[in-house]
Length: 224
Image (cartoon, rainbow, N blue to C red):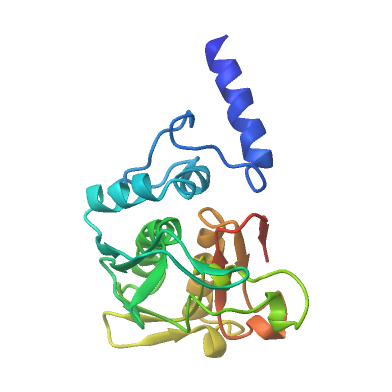
C-alpha cells in the first residue's frame, strides 16, 4: 500500500512538476549523486535541487565537479543570476560554463550520456562540447514583448558541436540532416537530453534552432 501511494504521488508530481517544484526536504526520490547513472527520476531530481542553491552546490561538490558559486546579481526586470556557478565538468565546455547550479548538474549527467552514445555509435569519446552561451538578458525568441527567455537567468544553454577523441567534430548545423553515423549520434544526443531537461529544442523545431540544441530547466516541458 505504501509503495502504491508513493508511486501515485511521484506520478502526480511527474505530471505537474513543470509548474510546481518541491524542495529537497520533501522530495521522496532524494538528492541525486552525480557520480551515478541518472535514474527514472533524474529530471525531477534536477527540478528539486533547483529550488535550493545550497543543496545544489553540495551535490556538485559530492559529485566531484569543480565549481565556484557566484554572487547573486540582478541586472534588469527578469534578468538575474541566482544560484549560478562557474564550473569545470569532466568534459570541458567552450566557452567555460557559467550557469544555474541545477542546469550545470544536468549537463554533468548529459555529458556522460553523450559520451556513451559517441562510444557506441562513433567509436570515439567526447573531449569537448561547444556552446554559444547561457546568459543573455532577452525575451523568448528575441521578441520585443513577451516572456523572458530562460537565458535571462542563465538557466539555458545552446549547444552547437561535440569534439571527439579521434580529432573529428560533430556539428549540429552541418551533420543533423545527413544520413551518417554523426547524424545518428546527434539524434540520439537530442533524445537523451529530453530525459534530463525540461525544454529541448533542436533543428526540427524551427529555423532559429537549426544550428544548436537549446536545453533548459524552465517551468515548461517540451522536447522537439
